[in-house]
Length: 442
Ligand SMILES: C[S@@+](CC[C@H](N)C(=O)[O-])C[C@H]1O[C@@H](n2cnc3c(N)ncnc32)[C@H](O)[C@@H]1O
Image 1 (cartoon, rainbow, N blue to C red):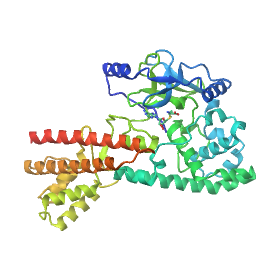
Image 2: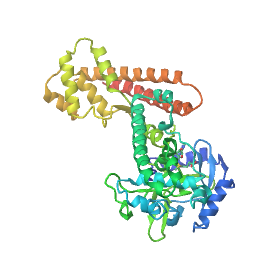
Image 3: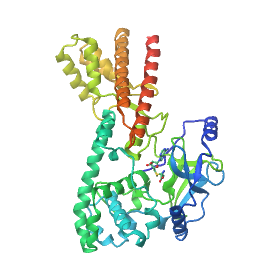
Image 4: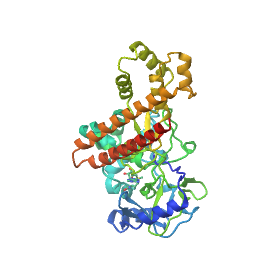
């Protein structure tokens, strides 16, 4: 879902600089057949003339371009309620009566089913001008081949496998339900292939906007009903610097996006999908952003452990190490949520705590607890050792990623993968440099 919650961390000077370097690298696509059809169809349903138009931009692809300058507080897009696709749209459609008999269906499943059926209807569907201009395929990691998946760092690899499994599980549920649509049209059942379902799932994942679930009629215990597809508005690309207010306006009866940034005529206009690092952007939306300050490199715990062992040799008895690992687990430092990472600001606090604990020669649990809550109990010698091991780990990660880049093939999703991995290298280099500077201060 493309939530628009951006809060800029950048000043006015930086924004101005960026604007001048990136603007006017576009090619207008407003006159292309599918876009003309989309705009004509939307106009006939009450869509007013907008101050932005579709265009192709270098780096971000198809997006929306300002037809005039915008100042903070200006509305950039307004889509009338009748052009939004929500569960209410589906409940009012020909499949509504069958859907109503299946309260187990989640809002996302309902929207996927609707998209597949309306796509199948082709030009006979009211939604055809919208559906026909949607991308045919996506570049999220669920579309990666096994070989491409194997080139991902371990953390993203695991997340991707989990997502693939989730999409597959959802598909099985929807396929079972599709039997019930036979009564409406015998052909419907053949629409529910995995490929088709995955496409619909990622249409929702990459393009839906947030709607207040309280206004929904569909109540499902597994998922809040907060999805809406908003034609034209969903052409807005992501920038972490974009600040907007987005939501359904009851007075105008439109979904509206108001910008808090300034744009000049011909600039690309953005929203912010959330302050996500490249791992999340690639997994959920299929793109990466160069120099993304939210990105982190995940360090596998096995590598941390191996590094500590090889640094200390036989000095740490295995019973003590086992106790320390158990202790870390109890204090959730090894849970899936833990941040054993480094980023543009250096090594994470959690990674340093984990290392300090594994390296300390004091085996008193009280001492371990104090390390975990960040109390200053580490000696200068221990801190030096911790920094040295952190440095060793980062260099090891760097080597692994460099080897991965060296093995990448061409074509497919490899360019995207290369961009992702190169950003990881850049982060590791920055962290290694920061660590060296810290070491000099110890
Ligand atoms: C809501 S759609 C935006 C419109 C889309 N570009 C299109 O052609 O339909 C979201 C998708 O746009 C692309 N996208 C959005 N922001 C991007 C960015 N900053 N850089 C590259 N691709 C981006 C990604 O493919 C993403 O899944």
